[in-house]
Length: 292
Image (cartoon, rainbow, N blue to C red; front, side, top):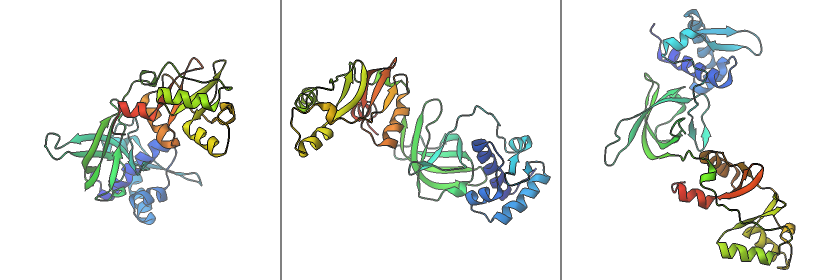
């Protein structure tokens, strides 16, 4: 059957939202995403319903959901185990949109690298000239950053000029952490903490007692204590930071990178079998992935 552009736009957005939320989608939500009048969307929904492409659910919690015929019509496989590949703007995923295919169009050009990004969702979410990020992809953890320079409403695709493309490391953090772990007991003094940081060229030392992590003392903690007039003989347990992020050793590095950015932290303690085993810092990550 021949669907109009607005019908395809509505149907693709409905499928994308339904895939994300697994409940009936209201026409007003679709209208907001594709930037159309809600009344227009409701009228088109009735036409799509007559074509057997959507079903309507009445009631306050009702809405619309796509039929199997809708997936067939748009040549989209309705699989439950499909990985989500998002598009982000300023680090925030764009709702109602996911990537289905990435085609490189000028990969071998010495100065340009363009790509055609096919999406499920409305291309009307994007404006020419804006910067977006695609990924990470499920297998090779590819991250693509670039500028939108074209929109193809027929294919449901974006044309982007790629500025940066990186495959995130997939190994677990135990391959990148610093180990054995340099630590201090809670009764160690600020003087000892300064000495161990200077000797090992590090900016923070975990405080451990009986293999249990109590906190971490950083150069910032030390500077704050000295500025407050505390003696160099003050125990580190009095000035240490108690809120320390613990991460299991088998966690993938790219997952920890996300935590560093979200929490604005400089280090995490790596745990093996419930005990502190190493430390991973921003410096460790930069050595592995210099473009971060």
